[in-house]
Length: 405
Image (cartoon, rainbow, N blue to C red; front, side):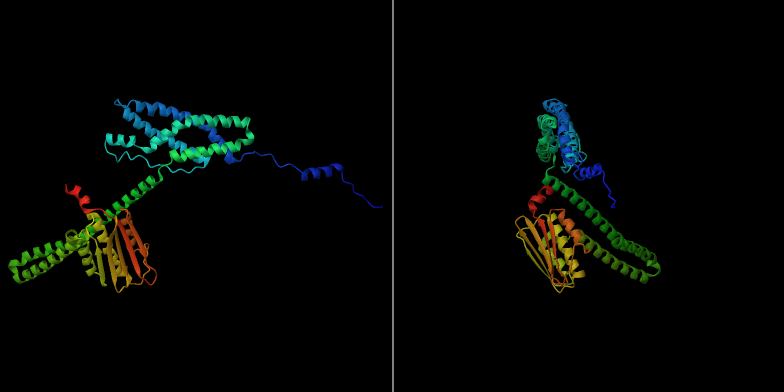
């Protein structure tokens, strides 16, 4: 007799139930959509705060400009509007995912006295755009709050689509009115960086001059003074020894004068001031260890500052040619192309020069960048090397007339 095992009916039905179970309950909107909905609901209280502040402080200050406190009140209101804009940008970042850069702060500390600071705050474009944003937000905040709140109870099937559309309008408003001017902010950042480069370069040059004076001419002059003192003591006792000491001191004077001339040439060569780039670069080329062909095609001289940067750029590049290139010849070409001064130094050496190789080219690139210049190195392995530098052209008369006055 065969044994039969029966399965309870409820077990089979339970298995069928498990196999055809409904998915777990979850919200119809994802987290991103809920953040957009929350942002739209918060629009109204934030719009009320911004509108009341703008009307109370900024517009009142604008209306009282004929009084003594009107302009200071308006300036303070614009600075306060900046803080409201900062809060709105933070809200847009956290709820809408809008990445808007913070504008540069108003440089009040560098403005000087009270009136320059007041004028700087009054003409702040970021503050005025925030005022416009706060005024436009009140009707928009009422609309988004009403539509979103109503849709939560009545139009919930289309709420995600409505929320996405209104949130996109919010994103556009934030980008248009609360974001800094990209070009202006980029330019400000570049100028701040260039100012740091110029300050560091000037400090390094001062340290170099101080070191050269201390280790060179100053030490030689100290030895000269000691030698002359000894010669003075021996003048009566041993005239011949005193004469030899005076001769040695005379030689020290010549060496000290030569070192001072070299140092002065390193600061600003006289030939550059008197005769311009052509003669100055020819003088530099004559001291290079390889033959250099210099071609200067300029009908007039640039501003003294641009001329000095061009001279020292070529001078350092030719020093690199002498020390590192292993070249047999080199060329220097200088010409003007519209509002730019172009320099090109080439050699037939081994090549392989890079801005990061520590040959001074990185410093040259930074210096040229500080005056809106460019620095390009083309140096494949095996050569040749061509370095092109570009500087803004400034007319010499226009640049030097104010200083002359």
